[in-house]
Length: 430
Image 1 (cartoon, one colour):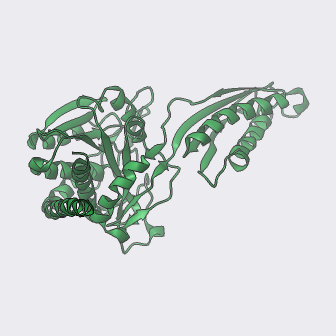
Image 2 (spheres, rainbow, N blue to C red):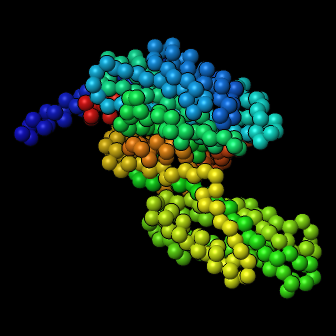
Image 3 (cartoon, rainbow, N blue to C red):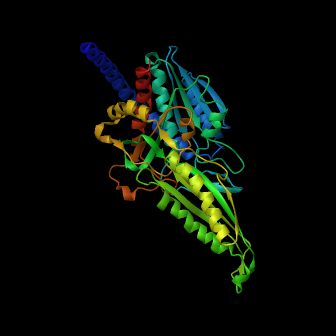
């Protein structure tokens, strides 16, 4: 029996090793194309839900591969299906498409000088978070997987998603809308893989974390209502400014005194306070807007219970009233890497990037709407290094800044990861 198991394991290893060699060779061959696609997409970025030319460019590439292509998903999204013609699982691969209202300050031959409309104003547009590389990497993986169609069993669904950065005011968009429109159906998707380029980790590395890897997002608004009075006679008022200040400080005790931070991090931040218009008038009302970030279901549920209690109690203690809206206008679930799937695919990450270059990372309190897919099906989301190895991490520009930069050399690993994860998952579940 043990000999049979050993032979089976050896056979699987031989199959995977041979496929790895072919993927490496094909990734080398397509790298220049991937770089060219990335440069074009970087030079001509578009804002969320406005990715019209971007979608055309991507769809043209996918149709050129002979894939079944659907456009206009969640307004500007593009979905393509590769059918091997053999039974097996359906694997989804996702890339986001939108740029940001940021003016690029890099001196590059493919620098963006594009503009767009954001909140009623004309603004510069830049791929300041690497979504151009995400699309180019997935286009490269689509090319390789199509060329390896005879070695697949099952189907691959390529998802090019708009509005990851958030839809414009008054609109819906992104992964949430794609899911509602059935992107994980027809055929039913079994598993989804996604990745994000990182300007702060070295080219050639991949980082992962099982479980909660990026935070849930829950924006909130608090309106504190008091009684207006002259600033010289505060005893005639019910001061919403002082009450708001007490609420801000009180909210900080939720995380510092109620959340078990050794298990998972959480954040409650107030980012905006507005009230009053003169130095000598205590206003009637103050409005605050903030965000909650959590990495576990338990922490999120606790904050949902605690925050209203504290807001109400502090306001009542000051003789004021407070209205809480939670969540405010949108939310993102936790980006949760299914632990069993992560464990099953970890050998693929290590084989593709190398043991030393496969890094177990800590969770972050940033967010990703990839989480909406993971609410429905198992998913794995990773970070691929894009920082030149000779640049110190502290000197690498941050995401969402005018100086944001990632090296083209980082994309080849992303192409190979998307390809190998698909091949290995199909091999494991044939």
